Image (cartoon, rainbow, N blue to C red; front, side):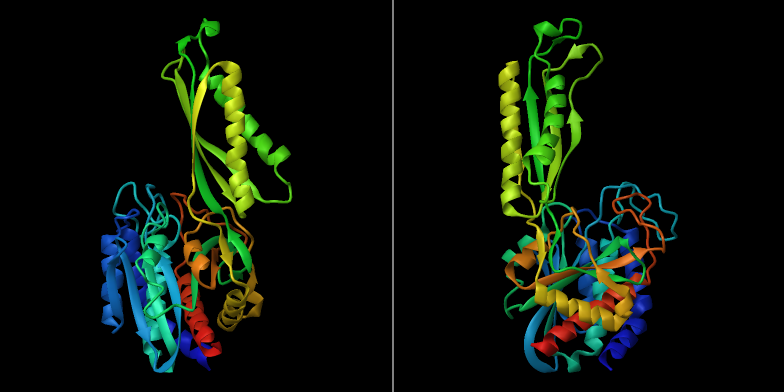
Length: 392
């Protein structure tokens, strides 16, 4: 039975996958600096006889496994970058780099895909087609997937479907969560500068106070969400940075705001910044102030293809059992696998890492998870690749 062979191969190389994960975790690299991680991925692929390209759109790596039989091509993807956090988790393989850690599981994504690559290389004679292995940089910042796509990784040979997964702190250990349609939001950003006229705090009538304007703007931005937007359309607007002033008794010249807008559809994605600017225009006109507003589009929303998602669901059931496969919820987190999903039928799924009754918080200095999750992610990726190619 194919699923048992996949599990056997994953188990065979599991300790190597753990070793790789810990090496990456101890030596984290920020976005666009993943040189050592990329080199480790490339060296490992070549060790297992997998054709490998490097330095794609920066530090991207692409492996190619040609099966023993002709067929279509499927792509499996992992991201490699870490975050600017100081690790506080009490683990023996703690980050050796102050201020940098793998706090979102990308070390596990890279190690899990390499573990899948080892298993697939062992089973390549049974593969009815080709598997591409995408190790991408800069998921947390500029969206390295887009650059790799522009560099041609979806061609030569043409990719017919793509799959990826995320270790997920809101899912229980040993489970897999899948969802057709919208899964992750477009994580757009905004920057606002409110420009007033500075002055003495005891003589506010002689100044134009941008702090008060900022307070009004922050509150009125939320009116967009509660009173101007359709309540049945999901979206989030969060002001996450407020900066202005230097001391207690001086009204500053300006105040800066930065934040994020999370949406799932193009209409709402355009509507919210447009309404924000209306608010800024009205507030500053009334107060005799001025403003600048910048809306920065980042990744598109991640939309899973229904047919590809059904392949993932059936594959996961073969690996962890039907009772351990559930429905994922939409999340306002962003994911640049969305660029791949825009181009070809794709599905992105979640692999649970939370102990029973608990949640694991991503982007936390205490983030940690049990490495047995590597067996689930690697085996599910392998099974999904086989099932897609066998159905094609």
